Image (cartoon, rainbow, N blue to C red; front, side):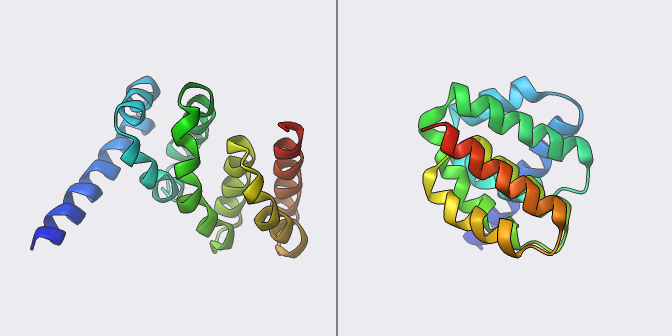
Length: 138
């Protein structure tokens, strides 16, 4: 029962963040993530939201947090990486883009695989650009 309560509150929190993002409350969400770094675990799930404004907002969130909360942004990687294998090419491309923004060198081999193997030309291009972005940071 306790796990059910935790999962339910996590689901409600995810929904609240997505709704806030859709309504343009990016600054509030940035503050939430900076206050509670456990929220980074929701980035991957939020990237799969069907609403374009939410997915675009997540990109803006990661870009901002890369600058404002660099010590915690890397914790989002583990939840983004699985999206490189998502059914939807848009989600795979968004995942590659976010990994490029975050800029962790350990993402390069995964992005190289995506750049070489993905069935979608745009996803392959985004992965190549993400690799370049990461390499330019060092």
